[in-house]
Image (cartoon, rainbow, N blue to C red):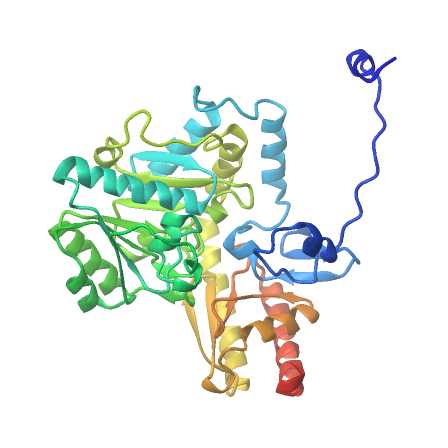
Length: 425
């Protein structure tokens, strides 16, 4: 019996052993766009992660604000498995029930009336920027095309989105870059007033800058941007890829500020690790995207939409968000206690909700990565937000006991950090 006949008859095929891999495999076979930790996670539950050697870690990264309901959340696993047994993909030649339910739920929960789904935050922002230019061209002509964004912002890694982001290190060597882009200082109202004219089609801002250092916008700043956009008939885009979906204590950060954008982008925690992104906007603006002007093969597929809807239903519950705000208060208190005991290392804690950064003092500037590496050796997974900020993004389900454990592990890490001579690090 040949292989084809065996498969047709339903006979079991031999299963080969899994390929043995470790951290060294990354260096051998992966394009070197990242320099990952020596730790290779193999299993997770809630805020706990285990590596290939069975070592346990407390995860205060949430996959960079992604697994906000924790690893292997039972409700999400159940929803995904049920949908996987029903329907995976049908293409954009058809719609599907899960994506229609998700779009309905998001529009009911937000200012938006229309939703576009894709696979990532970069794609959501790409769609937002294209829509803004298309909308301006249709209503005001092709000269209204300039996009204003903030320095040290981050909006994705496509050529368009990385150019809009205000960090030159990410665009070096990729020129020529898209044109008609202006970058202004974050939280600077006067700079915004000077930059925005009638040729601007959109202004994009993160209500809380993530990669740029965990910097919250002031309400006065966002309101000024709203007023300027209205004055100059430009669209205000809020990039809530990192700060949205409950991270700041409200479903989306704009709700806490009381300032409503024209377009909002979401991803990361929207799928809790399943790739999904969304662009939300109004009927009037969405009408610019007619059939054929934009698209995506996988966006809004039944699997992603099913997971995202379950995430949304969980996070938007008032009692869930109330707990996030309480947990944030408890974590800030713990971090402030650390700063009081290690004043030479850290100068302040800043951020919003469970999106927090510990800013290094002048003496230790540039050494955030060293601290996170040593913390990992102690069993605590942390992030950086640039070289001067240690970033904490625990899952929104973090318990008080886990906050206490994180404080204990971070103190141990700081003791070890201070005990090692600079030359040895």
